[in-house]
Image (cartoon, rainbow, N blue to C red; front, side, top):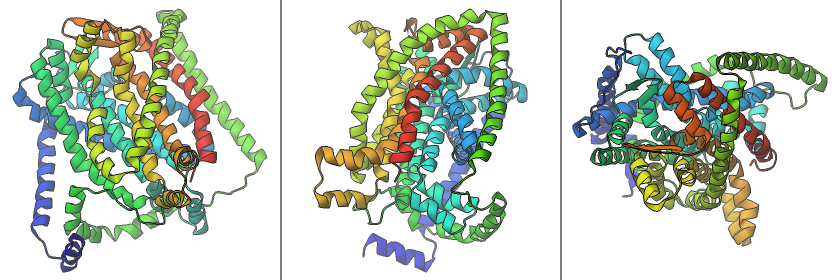
Length: 575
């Protein structure tokens, strides 16, 4: 008897088995662990005292649990933000003109820049409680996750297949139904893979999020990131090795228990007419499908479906006109541009006055020049990552078997914080004589190149299997296959990966242009090192100037390059 037959009979019988007991026990243990670990987030805390990190290896299991809790809370917040922000930008042409450039700026603002402001605000919001620091750390991790997911989902909304758009209009779906029945399923594969990559971005900045330095004060939270940061500062290679081992176990475990089941589940949302020859598989997902709990929970929640549909009618019907009044549109665009432009101009003038009173506007001169050096590193990284990882991503995405093998490996590499490799990097740079100005590109690549690889894999997986079969039947091979099918198919996803990789590279320059291990510090010439030094010194005018210049470079690069590629993907290469 096959596994599928056994599974069908088990579901028909409706009897509870040992599988249901194991699933229920696992959920209870997970909830209990989250509650126990969460209790540590509300203990008393005195901001004037410098917190110490316990670097005993026996502390690592608890630290790992605290880090995981922060990561998943930040991921949940990033998903909600993605749905709201990307939907608003995709559905409103006027909001898009403000929200997407703002997203360009947000993804370029370093995590350290967010932390400097967030710590003060959250500590004032929750005085005397560790919860304020926890919120600041979660917020910092959120800022390393949300932008990539938002760009990816925005791309899927703007390149929605035409037949799905016509289906929603023809049946008169409400906007609520269109989102849940059409738009979210169409972008599910890219959303999951971008979520996986964003989760890796959270690992990358874990040290910066859990060891917060603002001026002369240093705050540390229990976690693997703070443990590794303290071990690196002490120059203790043995404890750094324990942190690396713990991080590898965490990344592989999350991949096996969470991300691989999700990627296998999203196979159902592929836009194709023929069944895939070999679908993604997950042992965890297969085990859950053998349980009766999904069926029972679905039965309990079924009455909520019609209620949600009725409540969703308040958002209106998907009845956007295909032809609009141009004169009316121009008038609305002019009013919106005047209001939005006025608010932006007011903010810039206020910032200029503050800097002029503090240090003078000449403070922008040094970061503008240093930004050219970082721009050169970012450009080299993006070109090299494109040449290397696009073919590899297509190869992996076209092979479910290879995807199962490569996914955990890529997760470990993508989620590996560059800080953990600082001891090896310092030794390598000093031993070989390689300048940190060049070696910094390699460290930046650890946090940026994976965006291109993950998005390319998602784009290759989204190419309908019937189109690939048609190419096989027609005998299209080699460059013609790349030109006619592969490049057009992965191009929208690659653009998303490219723009987030670019922003990620700028952000990663903060931790890649200043490498410290023990008493040895190597500093590159660049804008990232400038911002890191200003943050450590508590020099807010220089910090604001550095972040503003970095935002300027990122926005200019996106306007001149990536936004044009986005339009090309929307108009020419959407399925």
